[in-house]
Image (cartoon, rainbow, N blue to C red):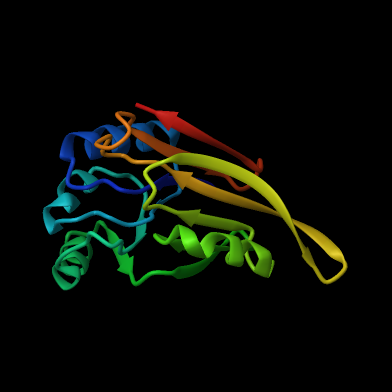
Length: 171
């Protein structure tokens, strides 16, 4: 299963369109948004996405009810409160917008993948955690900022759960 990972889109519709094109070209199976859509109209460019979207709210998301409604009624995806857990390809994932939770989530050993946003800094780390007597590999992924406002870089991440490979893509 191939995942696209995006965060901090901050109303930049042109950047979202370009990211969606990249995800469609990559043939992702699911897009995970780690928060800060900001306004409900951001669903418009996501309509072109050929995969389902799951997202969580960030600290800058305004009208959460309208955001959730627009994404659902237009068939774009489902939005959840932060954090949100899911299981894909027998792996447990958690998505948060709060970087302060990441180390504790990794130490828990409960998740194979931890996705977070907020910092606008693209980062991929593979670490290990002890679960009982076994060491478990954990991906910690921040896709950076799609909007490009703070760093001047527009980035997203791709994670292939079957190949166990992850990378940052700049566009």
